[in-house]
Amino acid sequence: MNDQQMFQDFRRFLGRFVDLSTIEIEGARASRWHKDQHSLGSYCYKTKGTKDKHFKDMRKPIEHKMWFVGEHAHPSEMSYANGAYETGVWAGREVFESLSGADEPSLSV
Image (cartoon, rainbow, N blue to C red; front, top):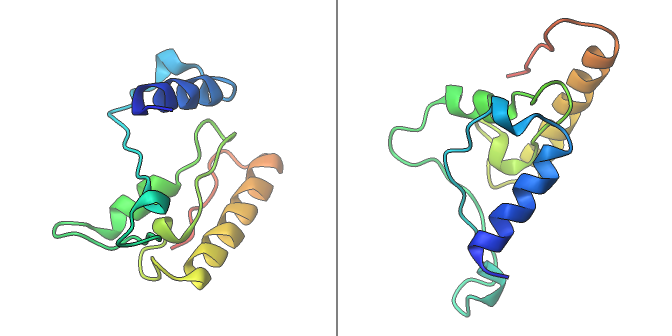
């Protein structure tokens, strides 16, 4: 599957949860680290200019229907399993708050 096909599949999947005409997807990239003979793995890290706000923005739910979690979404524990776990716990709380009728889930730090 090439990158364009992957992006189209993602858009179709995302369209099951949100009205795509209401959001702008700035771009997408796919890595094929599992085929890279030099890494056979992947991790994330902060680049110059990355702010904690970027991580909080990444965790914002889309229309209270879709949450993105994982080690990449943690402001200080990216690249670690505990970062993935903590973002999952945070998202669980946010989903509960959303289903409980809160107007806006509180994003944990």
